[in-house]
Every structure is written in C-alpha cells, then in structure tokens.
Amino acid sequence: MYWSFNCDSSWLTFESPSKNREILFSLGDGLQSMTGRLGYVFAQEYKNHFLIQNNVISGCCSPPDFYLYDKHTGKLKEELGCILFYGKDKKLPFIISVSNSNYDTLSNLDYNSIIVYNIDKGKRYSISLPEGEIKKALIEADEIYPEYLFEEPKVKGSIITLTYSLNSESKINESQRTVRIDLKEYMDY
Image 1 (cartoon, rainbow, N blue to C red):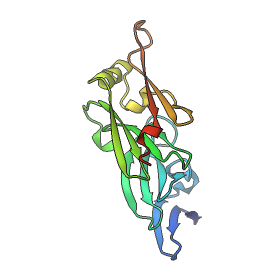
Image 2: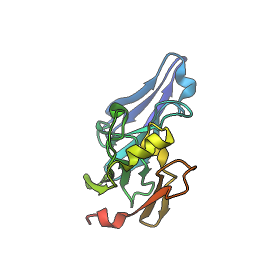
Image 3: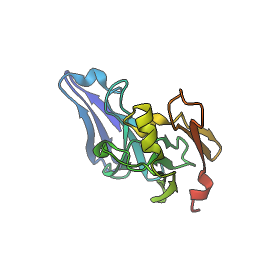
Image 4: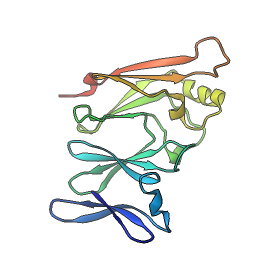
C-alpha cells in the first residue's frame, strides 16, 4: 500500500504481488492536507487481512470506523463499524466491538453484547451484557456512541480488560462494569 498525491488530491493504492492495483481511498477537493487525519489510516496487518481505520471526522465527536481487506487481492472483506479494541500483535488477531455499533445503525438500539472476532479464523463470539444496560448508560451520559462509555482497553498478555461507565459521575452507587476477556479462549488452535 502506498499514498500518492497531486496538487489537489491524495489516494491510497493497494498493489498486489502480481502488480494488480486497487485504489482503496481518495481525498479530493483540496483535502490532501488532511491525509492521515481524515479518511483512511492503516491500522494493522494480519495473516490474510489488513485493517484500515477510517477517521470519519478529523478530531473529536465521533469514533472512527474500521474496514477489513483481503491482503492478497485488496478487496474489501467487511465493514466492521466502530470497535473497542484491535490486536496490534499478529499473535492476537482479534477485534472487539459492541454489537450493532456502526454509523448505519445510529438509532434506538440495545447493545446487549460484546463481539470478539477472530480475524484469522473468521469466527465471531458473543459475550452477553445485562440487557438494556448500555442503552441506559448512553442516556445517562448523554452520549450517542457506546464506544465513548468505555475506558481505554487494558492489555496484559492475552487478557483484555474493558471497563465502561454505567451512569453519571454524580451517582455514588455502582458506576462502572468491567469485562475481562481471555483471548486464548477464542484462539481455536
């Protein structure tokens, strides 16, 4: 993959070993100065795929969404939407997300599970959350995106710890929930 530029645009090109080229993304209308801050930004390479982060807005206000591409053909395999975690180590080829979280489904949804996606195996696993808890927390926090309820994931070996807010800081009772995920359980050697 490589970026190309001219006086008023930039574009990200995938080139396969057989020299087939595929333009994955472009910024035109003089937006080339935003390359790397707006639109596609490479995230991670895995065994047979590569992950692209798409910055929908430069700066604040909405989480990036992610796309999974076949690294042999450059073809889009899957639109993943917003995610909580992606493995930055090829030994942990995982993406973790909240169910139903993407820009196409910004409606009155319940987010009742966390999805663990083993990219190399092409398998998804669901971890249930208490029904309606995320939806209620979104209302309480006056947020649109469930990803903004979560703290930065903590990674220790194959254990991912996700902590999310349940209610506003002004409430003294239980204000957070923690989900520990051991990715070894989802390896399918």
